[in-house]
Length: 506
Image 1 (cartoon, rainbow, N blue to C red):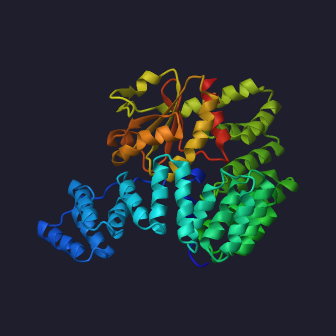
Image 2: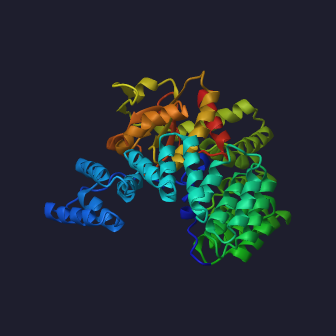
Image 3: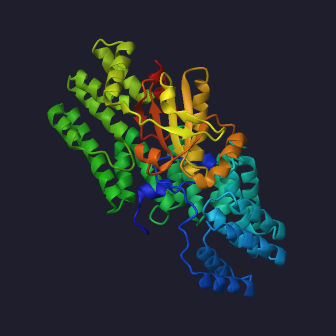
């Protein structure tokens, strides 16, 4: 292949915008304002003189900004003075606005608006304004800015892709055709592959999902396009659940010596061998083979493997082992499919639904641990919220920051579920881990109408909850114990959050 496939990196290089995020890994961290500069006053003065000698020189601006440091309050003051001195020079606000935007700082907005006032065809500035508006929770305005960026530079696939992406909610019925038109417009662009990838990934119908991933393979050879290579992994998952022979053929056609593909190939071969053994009534060897079969790290097909193991155990006459296998999996991450399977095997053991759920609850509570207590400042007042005061309620807790696209992408799904439980004992909390983005928080809440309680994060609480990337999510039960963790919610698994919360309310 053109590049070694880094599935976890590809799949998490998600659309910058929040309105189509898919949280599959926790790898996003806030940018911050960077380290304090150690440049000497003489060095800074020299770099300042270079800017004044040629205000058009963006490299001079970059060097000066780096030397002074974004944390120095004098920096913005200096740029405002230069904007007065050189009122027609758009590079001056672009330099400081771009630097602030790169660090996702709210001060960027003022300068970027000045850029487009002076230079309405500056696509880069419109693009950055779109990103900034999304951090303020201004989704519609963000889309308007992105459309302007795409219009200002029609040849740039990135701007066109994000403008297309933002139109999904506005015109969902025509969105598939818009994506296909986009692929014709950018037939040799990674962005074309990316657009088709997300169309396939977001499809509710398995048949549509397969159809679009197959179209992706045809239009954008996975040996050349990274998004297509990533899509073929998702197609493999779909094939695995419908026809493992197709899954193996796909691996042989697309796969390389990359460790992920090698793992997928070995997994598929074992599934086919196990099924052949089961058909021959050789259950002992089939069970042993599956016990030795490890699910690939990426993509995650652990649900498939658990159900395959349970089905094989049941065929061998051991319905109890089948039941225990799926009950443990369901207790960790519930889905309707797993629930149906657990109930099926439970019925064979004479267990009704209430008994099944009681068994699952016992498994879950046996693994629950006490949530670390905290008392954190509110954004909405000078008061604080103490986690201990919420005992007796279910707590959905997320660690986030306004610049986190996957966080913003997850919020609509969280909110949709929370709305179903608004009259019940459920509390929704969001801890902002980036104090440098504090100015965004309350406007974001107002503009989006999300109902979570925003709290001010601290290094201590992040350490207590082992937060290494955002979003990081937890569900805490009425007794103050962490019942679920290490989960992400998107359009494809929103039902899982419903099942998790329901299990803690009952």
